[in-house]
View 1 (cartoon, helix red, strand yellow):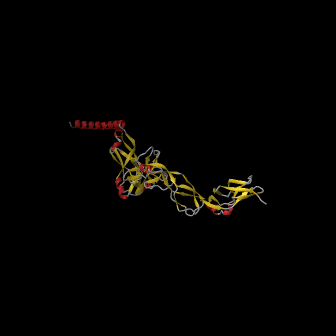
View 2 (tube, rainbow, N blue to C red):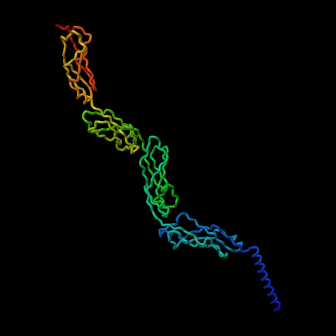
Amino acid sequence: MNDIFKENITVKIISLLIAIILWAYVVSDQNPKIIHQIKDVPVTLKNVEMLEEYGLVIEGDQEYKVNIRVKGRRNDIYALKSTDIEAFADLAGHTKKGVNVIPVQVVGALDKFEDVTLDPLNINVYLDEIIKKQIPVEVKYKGKLQDGYVKGVPKIRPSEIIVTGPSKSITKIESAVVELDLKGVSENIETALPIKLYDKQEKEILDDVNIAPSKTVDVKLPVIPTKEVKVEADFQGSLKDGYEIDKVVVQPSTVRIAGNGQVLDGIDFIKALPINLEGRSDDFSVTVKPVVPDNVFLVDEEETVTITVSVKEKEIERDFEIDRIEYRNLGDNLEIVQGGQVKIKVIVLGKQSEVDSIMPDDIKLFVDLGGLEAGVHRNLKVNIDAIPRVQILNINPEAINIELAEETE
C-alpha cells in the first residue's frame, strides 16, 4: 500500500516538473522577454514654485523629454501605456543661477519590468534671476486721419508698466508700444489696446514675461479739426525819421491751425510775433513764429514765417515862391513893356532828402516867346526846367499875360 502511494507521489512530482517545463517553454516561446523603448516621455518639473523664494525663474519655454528603456514580457510591455509612467525632476534644493543638472526620476507601473534605464539620466534646467523694469507706454500710429483733422495729445492709462521676468528677457526690452489705427477717423478715439514689447532694433519681443498692472492700456486720443488762416505781420517801434514801410511780404502767407471748431470759425487771420522797427532805414527780412490765440495751436508746432520788409524814404511836398522868370526866344527888336516879373508858387513832391536839398535858385521858370510879335499876349504858359528826382505837382499861376513892343532908340 505504501509502495503504491510512494509511486503515485513520484509520478505526480515528475508530472508537475514536466508541466512547469512545458509552461516555461510555452511562456518563453509565446510571451518572450523583450526590450522596448518608450520615446519622448515628458519630464515634469516639481517644486517650481520654490524658485520664486530665491528670486529665480526658469529661462524661456524649456521642454524636457526622456527615453525610457525597459525589459519584460511582451504582453506586459504591450499593455504598458505612456500614461502609466510619470517622469519628473525635482527642483528642490537647486537655487543656482545658470545651468542646474537635475536627475530624472520615473514612477508608475514599472514593477513588472527589469533593467529600467533612462536616456538622459539628467536634464539641464537653466535658471535666471527675476528682475523688474518700469517702462513708459508709447502710442504708434498707422493710417491717416480724414483730411482737415489732426491728432491731439493722447492720454494713456496706465502710462507706465512694470515688466517682470528673467533678466535675459527683461534687459532686452527697450520700449512698450500700442498701435492705433487712424485711417479715415474724424472723431475722438477711446479704446483698449494690447501692449507689445520691442528691443533696440524695434524687433518684437515674444518672451514670456509678466506685464503689470495689465497687458492692455486705455487710450484716449483727441481728433481735432483744422483751418488754414492768413498770417499778418505785426510791428513795434518806429523807423528812422523820414522813412516808411513800402511793402511787406509774409512767406508762407498762410498756416494751418487746430482747435475747437467754434473757435476756429471766428478766426480769419493770426499775427506773427512783433518785429521791432526802431531806427531801421533799410530793407530787411526776419523769421518769426506765428502767434495763436488761447485754446488753438499750430498743426506744425515748429512752423515759422519769413517776413520781408521793404523800406523807403518818405515823400514830402514843399512850396516854393519864385519871383524870377526867364523869357526865352524873345524876337529881335522886341521888349517886354508890361507883365515882366511876377511871383509864381511852385509845389514839388519827392523824397525828403531830395526835396530838402532844393534851393529856390534851383527852380528855373521860363516862358517861351518864340514867334510872338509886338502886342498883348494872354495866357502864356509858365514852364519849368526838370528838377532831378522830384515831381512838379503845381505851378500857380500856370500862365501869365505879357505885352511886347518894338524897341525905341
